[in-house]
Image (cartoon, rainbow, N blue to C red; front, side, top):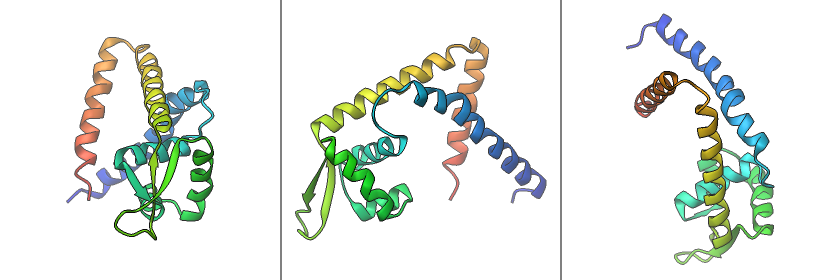
Length: 148
Protein backbone atom coordinates (compact mmCIF):
# COMPACT_ATOMS: atom_id res chain seq x y z
CA UNK A 1 0.00 0.00 0.00
CA UNK A 2 1.29 3.42 -0.97
CA UNK A 3 1.69 5.98 1.78
CA UNK A 4 -0.57 9.02 1.51
CA UNK A 5 2.24 11.59 1.22
CA UNK A 6 3.87 9.60 -1.57
CA UNK A 7 0.55 9.29 -3.44
CA UNK A 8 0.01 13.04 -3.14
CA UNK A 9 3.52 13.68 -4.48
CA UNK A 10 2.91 11.36 -7.43
CA UNK A 11 -0.37 13.09 -8.27
CA UNK A 12 1.24 16.55 -7.94
CA UNK A 13 4.13 15.53 -10.19
CA UNK A 14 1.85 13.94 -12.80
CA UNK A 15 -0.34 17.04 -12.85
CA UNK A 16 2.82 19.06 -13.49
CA UNK A 17 4.25 16.61 -16.05
CA UNK A 18 1.25 16.32 -18.36
CA UNK A 19 0.90 20.03 -19.27
CA UNK A 20 4.69 20.33 -19.52
CA UNK A 21 4.82 17.39 -21.94
CA UNK A 22 1.95 18.92 -23.91
CA UNK A 23 3.66 22.34 -24.08
CA UNK A 24 7.23 21.19 -24.78
CA UNK A 25 6.68 18.15 -27.03
CA UNK A 26 3.16 17.75 -28.41
CA UNK A 27 2.10 21.34 -29.10
CA UNK A 28 5.23 22.39 -31.03
CA UNK A 29 4.97 19.27 -33.19
CA UNK A 30 1.28 19.80 -33.91
CA UNK A 31 1.78 23.51 -34.68
CA UNK A 32 4.38 22.72 -37.34
CA UNK A 33 2.27 19.83 -38.66
CA UNK A 34 0.53 21.16 -41.78
CA UNK A 35 -1.80 18.24 -42.49
CA UNK A 36 -5.49 19.02 -42.55
CA UNK A 37 -6.18 16.55 -39.77
CA UNK A 38 -6.95 17.34 -36.15
CA UNK A 39 -5.27 15.42 -33.32
CA UNK A 40 -8.63 13.74 -32.64
CA UNK A 41 -8.95 12.66 -36.28
CA UNK A 42 -5.42 11.28 -36.11
CA UNK A 43 -6.31 9.39 -32.92
CA UNK A 44 -9.33 7.84 -34.71
CA UNK A 45 -7.11 6.72 -37.58
CA UNK A 46 -4.54 5.33 -35.13
CA UNK A 47 -7.14 3.24 -33.29
CA UNK A 48 -8.67 1.97 -36.54
CA UNK A 49 -5.21 1.12 -37.85
CA UNK A 50 -4.55 -0.96 -34.73
CA UNK A 51 -7.94 -2.71 -34.79
CA UNK A 52 -8.07 -3.09 -38.62
CA UNK A 53 -11.88 -2.86 -38.53
CA UNK A 54 -14.15 -1.60 -35.75
CA UNK A 55 -17.77 -0.53 -35.27
CA UNK A 56 -18.77 2.93 -34.04
CA UNK A 57 -19.77 1.78 -30.55
CA UNK A 58 -16.48 -0.01 -29.94
CA UNK A 59 -14.50 2.88 -31.42
CA UNK A 60 -16.30 5.42 -29.21
CA UNK A 61 -15.65 3.22 -26.16
CA UNK A 62 -11.99 2.75 -27.12
CA UNK A 63 -11.54 6.51 -27.49
CA UNK A 64 -13.65 7.29 -24.42
CA UNK A 65 -15.93 9.72 -26.28
CA UNK A 66 -19.61 9.56 -27.12
CA UNK A 67 -20.92 8.31 -30.44
CA UNK A 68 -22.47 11.73 -31.20
CA UNK A 69 -19.01 13.30 -30.71
CA UNK A 70 -17.42 10.64 -32.91
CA UNK A 71 -19.86 10.82 -35.84
CA UNK A 72 -18.71 14.18 -37.30
CA UNK A 73 -15.07 13.10 -37.01
CA UNK A 74 -15.82 9.89 -38.91
CA UNK A 75 -17.85 11.80 -41.50
CA UNK A 76 -14.91 14.14 -42.21
CA UNK A 77 -12.51 11.24 -42.55
CA UNK A 78 -14.93 9.46 -44.87
CA UNK A 79 -15.13 12.60 -47.04
CA UNK A 80 -11.34 12.64 -47.29
CA UNK A 81 -11.48 8.96 -48.37
CA UNK A 82 -9.33 7.87 -45.41
CA UNK A 83 -12.03 5.50 -44.13
CA UNK A 84 -14.64 3.17 -45.55
CA UNK A 85 -17.83 1.79 -43.99
CA UNK A 86 -18.59 -1.90 -44.47
CA UNK A 87 -21.34 -4.20 -43.24
CA UNK A 88 -20.02 -6.76 -40.76
CA UNK A 89 -19.95 -10.28 -42.19
CA UNK A 90 -21.36 -11.85 -39.02
CA UNK A 91 -24.25 -9.37 -38.69
CA UNK A 92 -25.14 -7.11 -41.62
CA UNK A 93 -26.87 -4.65 -39.26
CA UNK A 94 -23.47 -3.71 -37.82
CA UNK A 95 -21.38 -1.22 -39.77
CA UNK A 96 -17.62 -1.52 -39.37
CA UNK A 97 -15.14 1.19 -40.22
CA UNK A 98 -11.71 0.49 -41.65
CA UNK A 99 -8.90 2.43 -43.28
CA UNK A 100 -8.64 2.78 -47.04
CA UNK A 101 -5.23 2.44 -48.68
CA UNK A 102 -5.07 6.25 -48.69
CA UNK A 103 -5.90 6.30 -44.97
CA UNK A 104 -3.13 3.77 -44.26
CA UNK A 105 -0.65 5.82 -46.27
CA UNK A 106 -1.65 9.09 -44.56
CA UNK A 107 -1.33 7.40 -41.14
CA UNK A 108 2.13 6.07 -42.04
CA UNK A 109 3.33 9.44 -43.38
CA UNK A 110 1.99 11.40 -40.44
CA UNK A 111 3.43 8.95 -37.89
CA UNK A 112 6.85 9.15 -39.54
CA UNK A 113 6.66 12.95 -39.67
CA UNK A 114 5.63 13.28 -36.01
CA UNK A 115 8.37 10.84 -34.95
CA UNK A 116 10.96 12.82 -36.89
CA UNK A 117 9.85 16.11 -35.35
CA UNK A 118 9.89 14.72 -31.80
CA UNK A 119 13.36 13.25 -32.45
CA UNK A 120 14.53 16.68 -33.61
CA UNK A 121 13.21 18.30 -30.43
CA UNK A 122 14.85 15.65 -28.24
CA UNK A 123 18.15 16.00 -30.11
CA UNK A 124 18.46 19.54 -28.74
CA UNK A 125 19.07 18.01 -25.30
CA UNK A 126 22.62 17.08 -24.25
CA UNK A 127 23.30 13.32 -24.62
CA UNK A 128 23.22 12.71 -20.85
CA UNK A 129 19.75 14.32 -20.64
CA UNK A 130 18.56 12.24 -23.61
CA UNK A 131 19.60 9.08 -21.73
CA UNK A 132 17.92 10.28 -18.52
CA UNK A 133 14.74 11.06 -20.44
CA UNK A 134 14.73 7.66 -22.14
CA UNK A 135 15.34 5.86 -18.83
CA UNK A 136 12.55 7.86 -17.17
CA UNK A 137 10.12 7.08 -20.00
CA UNK A 138 10.92 3.35 -19.84
CA UNK A 139 10.40 3.39 -16.08
CA UNK A 140 7.08 5.23 -16.45
CA UNK A 141 5.86 2.80 -19.12
CA UNK A 142 6.76 -0.21 -16.97
CA UNK A 143 5.16 1.21 -13.82
CA UNK A 144 2.03 2.68 -15.44
CA UNK A 145 1.39 -0.58 -17.32
CA UNK A 146 0.91 -2.21 -13.91
CA UNK A 147 -2.03 0.07 -13.00
CA UNK A 148 -5.35 -1.73 -12.96
